[in-house]
Amino acid sequence: MDRTKKLLSLSGNPDEKYYIIHVAGTNGKGSTSAMLEQALLSSGLKTGLYTSPHLHSYRERIRINNKLISEENFAEETEKLRLLIEKNKDLFEENPTEFEFLTIMAANYFAREKVDVVIFETGLGGRLDSTNALRTNLSIISNIGIDHKEILGETIELIAGEKAGIIHSKGQVVVGIQENAQGKKVILEKIEKEKANYYDAEDISYKILPEKDGLQKIYVEELETEVLLNLQGEHQIDNMLSVISALKFLKKDLPVKISDFLKGLSKVNWPGRLELLKYQGREVLIDGAHNPQGARKLKKYLDSKYAGRKIYFFLGILDDKDKEGILKEVYEN
Image 1 (spheres, one colour):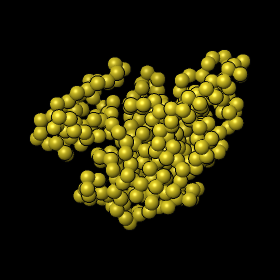
Image 2 (cartoon, one colour):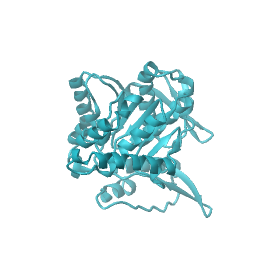
Image 3 (cartoon, helix red, strand yellow):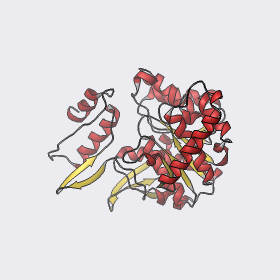
Image 4 (cartoon, helix red, strand yellow):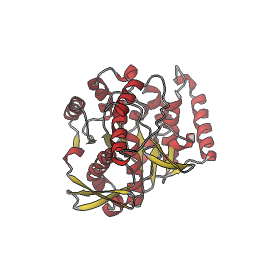
């Protein structure tokens, strides 16, 4: 992270000018980030969101109040940072990577636009991710599974160790619902080592109610209220529990209106996650599941919503992914 830290310093430490929520995990970190953005926006705060990858436009990666950075601002921020690097090229043995560049560019843009709070999603892993160079107020770790083994490690323990690298000394942490006990153990050990304060999303009791107007409806016992969620799949309820756990920290640190915060969950939109479209009179369901863990969630949703129906399944995926594992989850289980 040395180059990123140098760029932050050269840029005047823009990350010190707003509240930062840092989100890592294998599955669900993007959905968790999107929920947080909409919940905070609905609470009356000016929000920034930094995610990857994008689906349609590169500008999706940098948003303010749920609006993509404009082409003009993107070009302007790119040129400003390029000139800064050129002016200080003697400080760098190698040019910053694309992701390092984009992370600092986003940090600068959010500071320029005077946002109140920014959600930064990690690109890969956590410990050595460029986003981990940023000063953080709250860390969230969503469900951890096996992915990017060639970079993060072959075992769940190694991968969890990399993700848990976003936990800092005496920091604030939310532990999302974890399917793997060994991975969770690594996270909790890191929390203890860093003497961090944490909430466990697993501690929140809830009851799933019949849907309302196409939205998931959940009664959250701790809040004694019903919550509507505009994302499909029970796994999104797990992500929602991380967001509600984060609320325990956020309401102490930010002027959050809890009722508006929860209403924001009914408005959240995150394309490519069990997204239902219509094409020539047919239903087309699009999902970004790219590992066996994600495929398991997809299969569970298909069984609950489309049992007995004939489904045509198309899989487009990079060669480094576990294609056999994904297909096994969908077809054999």
